[in-house]
Amino acid sequence: MRPLRQQVAHARNHIAVQPGTSVASITIAYNGACALPQHIDALLEQRRPLEEIIVVDNASTDETCALLAARYPQVTVLRMSENLGGGGGLAAGLTYAALQKRHDWIWMFDQDSVPARDALQIMIEEAEVWPETSVQIGIMAALPVNQKMETCSVPWFWRNGFAKPSAELLCQPVMFPDLVITSGSIVRREVVERIGLPRSDFFMDFVDYEYCLRARSHGYKIAVITGAKLRHEIGKARKVRLLGRSRVWSEHSPFREYYMSRNLVYSIWWLYPDSRTKRYVLRHLLRHAAGVLLFGSDKLACLKRMAQGVWDGRRASLGVRFRPD
Image 1: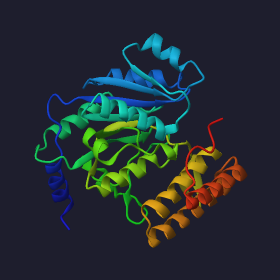
Image 2: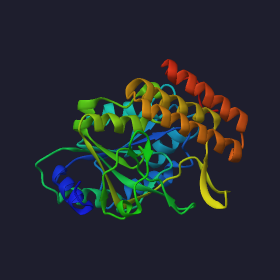
Image 3: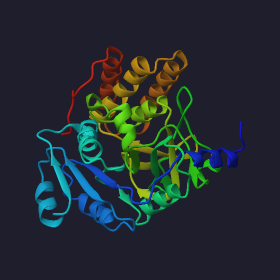
Image 4: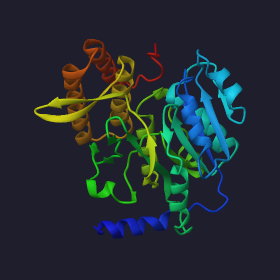
């Protein structure tokens, strides 16, 4: 195996963003009137301007549409007739941005993520200095940081289950994991054309990881530009203590526990079946259930939804079963 520096240098031969490249953003919004102003202002203030800012409104029932019309007339708004979830919203946004408008790269976001002002510039500049001989890198990503918890949402390797990168790798300017979250990721148009759209039948959760696994299975690499930062929180995070050690626990609503469990189980049992990975997933779900029992605020409802998710995932019963309250 190559030393780490040689791996980074070798991987740099496989990405290129040419000057004049068109970059658009898509943001999936649902009842985001409170969160969107800070997010969109951060996009408008990027040092490397975006060619188009797109918001996919998932049938919001608050003042989201009025806010966008009044304060951000320059933003393209795609209004959905019903809540399609993160998966359906991403599919709609990428259909427009990549397949219809043919932007070269599409920067994807949740509505509550706030990229640093130089995030896009850092990623594009890092990519532009690399040779143009290959398009092997299909996805780039910023590093999500939870300032409140003083932690980052680390990207993952996939080794028959989730594997954390070392501290050494996280200190490198560029690292090459297998899995990154949607928010803050940029996908190349060619990837969308070749591997298809994110799964709308997942509705939400594990949509991003399944898409990464799909891209990896088609030979694309994923690059995290660690100097590009993104304020982002997954769930309602808080610090807890277990066996004398401080840990971060992310609280999720029962309906999200359902989709997280279902889509993970479905992916491993039906899309990427492997006996070792199945054993890992069962242990992973048991550990998470124990965490819900110890630290969750709605224990029984969350455990019930987890069990339903596992059952539906094994049966390949997808689609929308529960919606946000």
